[in-house]
Image 1 (spheres, rainbow, N blue to C red):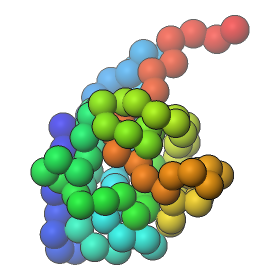
Image 2: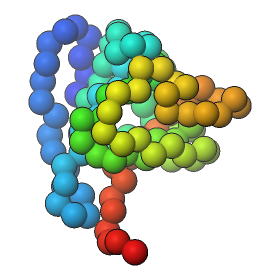
Image 3: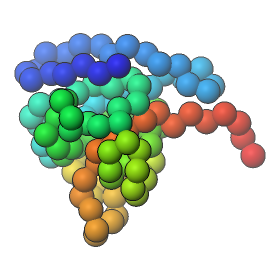
Image 4: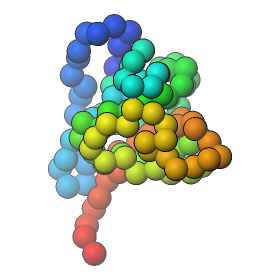
Amino acid sequence: MAEQHGGPEQAAAGKSHGGLGGSYKVIVYEMENFQGKRCELSAECPNLTESLLEKVGSIQVESGPWLAFERRAFHGEQFVLEKGDYPRWDAWSNSHHSDSLLSLRPLHIVGWL
């Protein structure tokens, strides 16, 4: 489930329950430092730039964890995003090859080793 926001209004995203009964919520912003157009997600999104945003500049993970991918359809380099703020691309990636993040899904943890 995704909700788009062009202004400062706040809206609650729906909740998706994961493997251990947790809820998942992430807010993705087009610009660095949590500025610009934003989109709230509570379920996977295979293409953030198709109709939601032009690019990903910053991320706030409110509940998770989430698995982010540098390419559409959950391909390319992967990044695990735990609860917290990621104000620019180098906060979630140490890659010098790509500064893009194009798909995102909740990371369902089903058991402990």
